[in-house]
Amino acid sequence: MVFGLTVALLVKLVLNDRSLHWKHAVFAGVSCAIASMLFFVALGYFSGGVSTGSGGFNTLNADMLAFFNPNGTSRFLPNVPGMVITNEGFAYLGLGGIALVVLACMLLVGTDRWMLPLHRVWPVGVVALGQCQVWMRH
Image (tube, rainbow, N blue to C red):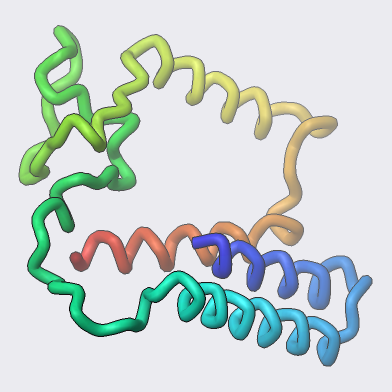
């Protein structure tokens, strides 16, 4: 996820801000990927002898709707169907918290002073949507 946000920042700096040359951005992106792989190797991520069928994988997680799925704790909002809820992924904001998020988004879009121009934030949105699609398939 962090690597995806790094790539989004590099794309923004090259295409929108024009403060970084594309050759430097490619070098930075490749350097980050190599550094990540070296870090994984140093921690033994690619070493053998580890079973992929160990317990807890895909059950101790949080998905994209963790903030909005009440898991039976709300009087007003229903549960999101088809989701396996675990205590690890329970992060329900509550109806008031959700209302505050909606209000903040409305205020952010409603005033010209605080509004984020779409051309400056689209790389982050593309990465977030791509990661959401990957998570939804698993």
